[in-house]
Length: 106
Image (cartoon, rainbow, N blue to C red; front, side, top):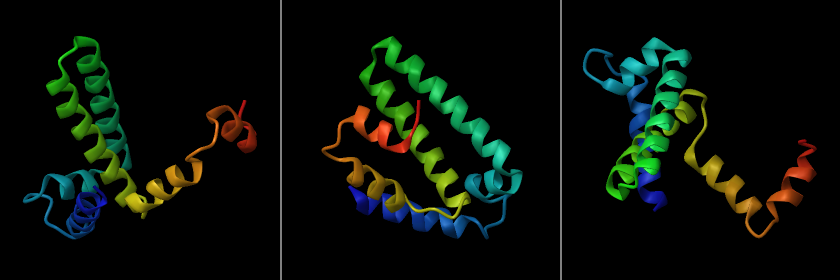
């Protein structure tokens, strides 16, 4: 699975220097962080609505959009999907309650 994430990450990096009139992702980058964050909010809402609607195909479609735009955000911030995967691996086998307590979150 990480193969597709690596390929997407590479493409998203390439889009940083692409012409915004020829690439949706380049256009998002050109608009800046607020536009990327707004798009993630929209996709998160659509994902929630799809889940509530009970259509699994629609949920998969919307989740793909949410993940994609999250990957755009990571690339915009100079991060790679592996950074998130490494964090998930670090948490594997830990109680969510214990992990959160170790961070000092309330």
